[in-house]
Amino acid sequence: MLDLKMYIDGEWRDSLTKEKRDILNPATGEIIAQAAEGNAQDARLAIAVARTTFDSGVWSELSAVERASYLFKIADHLEERQEELKLLETMDNGKPHREAGFDVSDAAACFRYYAGLITKPDGQTYAVPGPMQSMVIHEPVGVCGLIVPWNYPLLMSVWKIAPALAAGNTIVFKPSEVTPVTSVKLFEIIEEVGIPKGVANLVMGSGATVGQEISTSHLVDKISFTGGTKTGREIMKAAAGNIKNISLELGGKSPNVIFADADFETAVDYALFGIFCGTGQVCAAGSRILVEESIYEAFLTRFAERAENIRVGSGDDPRTEMGPLVSKAHMEKVLDYIEIGKREGARLVCGGYRMTGNGLDQGYFVAPTVFTDVTSDMRIVREEIFGPVVTIQSFKNEQDAIALANDTVYGLAGAVFTTDGAKALRVIKKIRAGITWINAYHPTFNEAPWGGYKQSGIGRGLGTHGLEEFQEVKQININLQVEPTGWFEN
Ligand code: TXE
Image (cartoon, rainbow, N blue to C red; front, side, top):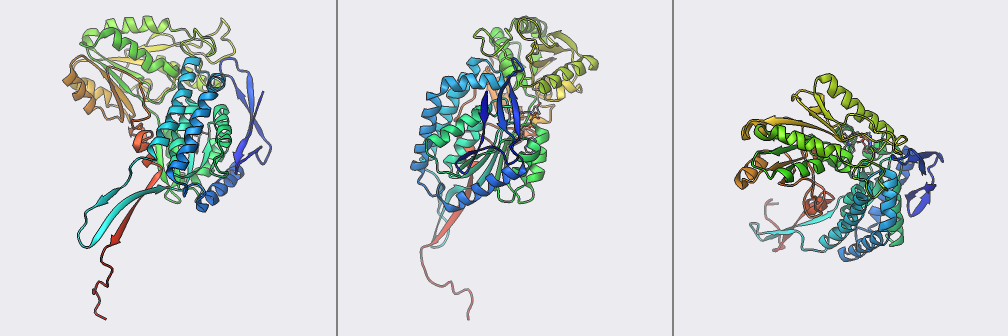
């Protein structure tokens, strides 16, 4: 059994209360680790360390090339430990090995991307009036609180830690209390490569204690959070005290629009991937499929037939295509939504139940679930379920499709399938969402900004935008003629 400790000021520690939390394998319900359960006091300690370390300049004043060299080493170590990290991610989160392996490679690539980016040309100069030269430079924001969820435990950590460190910040990082294993391993690597102590601090514990303290503390300059919209709202309130810089990547209810002229099998295939990859626990999941009337029946039949054939099982079985939900509590929430859907009068086409037998009894498995005959006011159409549950609706024409697609408080992602290039771009431009695809669903790139419109969040992760989220912008105006202005006579 793994014993997971917090990492504060370069030391591995239990929490001040010595409390522990059991960490479970969602495929078996077995305890795989015990994690130090921190509280607000532990968070305060880590925040104070991060503050002093930032103000000392030990990290922010290193050259970009020096900081980059540490990040390149982290990437190398991640790759060296890829197999171990993959197995641990599957044990902790439940995702199949092929998804976990992909996450580890992507995490290494993300560190390399920001290591490279931080040494590239930066800033601007302006031709301003008068004998002045004006220029703009970027500086680190300061102490960054990073709070991440459980659906991509390692990758979500890296999406924040890599740009935050590249930019010269110090960090107080909180993993999800459900899935802390791989982020502890990442901090082992951070220690191994010799990042100065106090720069990167890891505190474990619940959102209500540790998360709340990080969000509230006046010593923290920035919060970067990924998680549910409800929590995002609480973090905004907590962060208001010292007007923290905030980035929020929240929930979604993303539309996947399929026109009759789409390549049919490609559309079905990506639509399956869009909702069932990650067991639907993906913020950008294509959880509302909208299909043009003339192919609706054919699409529904083919989609349901393939959904029913998805091999659900433990993530460490190489044949598994879809793993369990992350926890019992989350499974119960998803099963509740299925009941809500039935009560609301939606037609259950397939799935809709907890899977048992064949060794699945102790795990949190829910069958791929498809609802149709839904209306836009149903909760299963409006609310983020975050599980393998999709609704399929039909639309009449382009305008109708756009209206349905945008009929949501969220605006994270969306896709369009059609062979008409002009129509594809026309429709995508009308969809109020930050991440979109044409004739694809889900490909995600370290180079491109990730984030949403409306209640899906504020700011962008990844790409150059993701670095800027961790930087302040400073203008420097230089007088080229050093003499009095003569504005006041005496
Ligand atoms: O997430 P939370 P939960 C959505 C999804 C899911 C719902 C609830 O719909 O069903 O959110 O999931 C920390 N101050 N997403 O409850 O609470 C918490 O400890 C500071 C979408 O598991 O958002 C964890 O580290 N922090 C999503 C992190 O927030 C707080 C991914 C995320 O947990 C806090 C996950 C507080 N008051 C869930 N309360 C996505 N966008 O990908 C909790 N936390």
